[in-house]
Image (cartoon, helix red, strand yellow):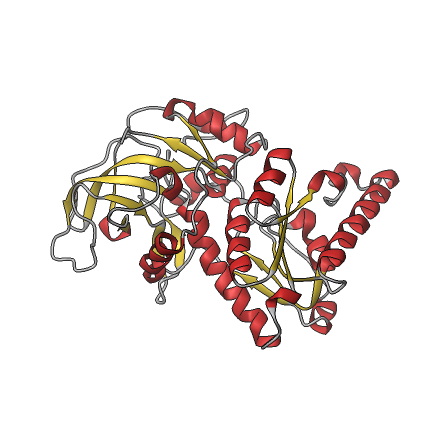
Length: 378
C-alpha cells in the first residue's frame, strides 16, 4: 500500500519490489501460501480510522497479518519461545506489540512500525509469531486461513459469556437468544453460542448467506426485510419519509427478535458494525443483556443513555484480537472440536487479483464470510 490514491481501495495497492535486510536473531523468512482478507486491511486502504502510513512514518506498507505461511529460514538464536522450524506450515499471529498480559496493543502489518505483511511473495517476521499447524491436521489450508476470525471470536465470546453469567448465574441458555449482525467473526461466535445451548440467530443480506446460516443451525433473519434499518446519513437527516421508513424497519426488526426470544430480547448481541445500527442493538437487548464487539466496520463513535443502560443492567464488552499465550489452545480446540470455517465456504482470489478483492470486499460484492487470497503454491 502506498500514498493516497483516487478511486476505490484497490487503487491504493501497488505491485512492486520491497526490500528488507537479513534475518536478525529471533526472525524467520517465510513464504505466504494463503492470506485472509480482513477488515483491518480495508481500514488501512481507506485510511480510516487512521492512516497507517503516516502513523508508522513509512511511505509504503505491506499489508496482510493473518494467513498460512511456510517457513523458509529460521534464525531462532537462543530463544526458547520459538516453536516453528524450517519447512513448517504456520499461522501468523498478528501481534506487533503486546501489553504486560499478552494482549495486542499494535497489530503486525497494520499499525506496528517496521512489520511486513503477507501481500508479498516472501516476508520476514518475529519467529515467535509463527504458530505451527497441527501435525496431520484433518482440515485444509483454506479452512485454516480464516483462523483469525475464529481466534478473535473465541476471545470475544468467552468474555461476553462470562460477563452474562455474572448476572444470570444459573438459568438454562436454551431460554436465551444470542444474535449477531453479519460477518465471519459473528458466525464463529454464534457457533460457540450454539454449542453452549443458546438459541442463535443472525442477520444476512443475500440468498446465499441465508442458506448458509440455515445449513449450520443458525436462524437466518433476512436483512432485506428491513431496508431502512441503518441510521440516516447526513444527507438524509431532513428527510421525514426516510425517518418514517426507518421507524418501521426498526419496529419490524425488534418484533422479530422478541419473537425469537419469547418476548425477552437478546441476551448477548454481537455487534461488529457500529454507529449505523447501534441504537437498534441496544433496543433489542434483554434486561441483563450484553452487547459485545471486537470490531468497528461502519462507525467507531457511539452514544447511549447511560441511565437507561444502567437500569437495564446492560454490560458492554469490547475486545481486540486475543491474548497471544492463548493461541496454541485455541488452535488445538479448532482441530479437536472441528470449530472451523466450513469446507468450501471461502472464496479465493489469485494474487494478481488482490486489488479486485479489495474493491469487492469494500462494496459488499463477496457472498462468503471468508474471503482469502493465494500468494504462493503449496
